[in-house]
Image (cartoon, rainbow, N blue to C red; front, side, top):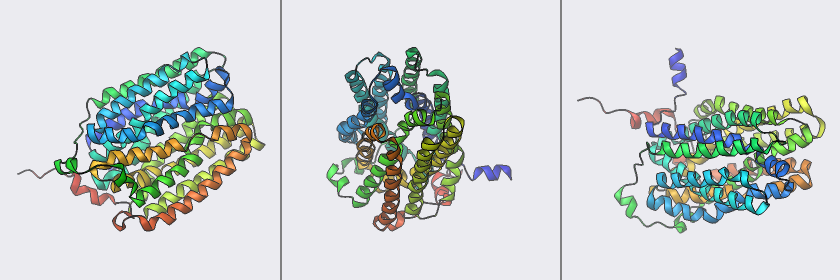
Length: 420
């Protein structure tokens, strides 16, 4: 009974996909160590203005935008595994050298290098997962990716909170070097992953970005993701500064808030992925920004009216609620991008999709510096607009993809041949 109960949450993924998840845990552990404290490092340790620090963090996204289109061509021509390995090395260099920064321009250069690596990292990893996973289990693969990456981020956030101390710059050197090492560890794991490639017919088919941009369903998904990042994901890097300045919580508590966010994702991601199987995809996706809107309004209220332990408790609740919302993104959104993208164009599809992450993340730091209590209600309003957009886009989704596949559809694809 217990075994059968647990089995229903088994994502039924191939071995190579699990290897990618192992690499993702290592890599995300390093990211979790650094990301909650990057703005704090630039602002409090190196003395850069808060707006400048936010712009530096956002400059990674600008570099991703500039090089993103090239990464799609490289993925489709040379394969996602090679592109992913090169992206990991560039990100290791970008983060690993941040302890040497003394002037803003130096940070801009290193973050640009990291952004170029990210331009190759995200679309190549998504393309590789799509190639390795049967279509009926892609939503489960992207859900599992969310679990493993957030597990690493959560553990990293706790570790980073115990290491980081503004009065001792050496502690931040430790953070950045650990992060760089995890990128390289993921590159080693890739040596054991097989890239199945595409069929000869697909490889010979014409490939261009024009075909990608003519796909109206994909363009609609792109704009949705732009709103998700602008009003959701990008603000996670700004939340620590707001929480510390206005909620008077410590670095360790900031690390714990991020750990709670990721722990919630680790615990509820697979049940949510299982629950939405067979349900309308875009309705499930619309739940995510609604939950985020509530989360940001709670953050705003906690910063305005609470401090210390009380603020920490409410911030933790908001982070947990935000995490529940995140659980809808992978199975409902990313899997759909993989499903609508032809094999020989999937690198380009995911590269353009990654641009929505890059273009949306640069303005929050300035709003936070100028009007910190306005940022979160504005973000909540944008989240509600995105929810309405998700519902409106459903009519453009192909009928066969409007519902998330059920587990039973994947069993024949994954079953071993019967012995003769």
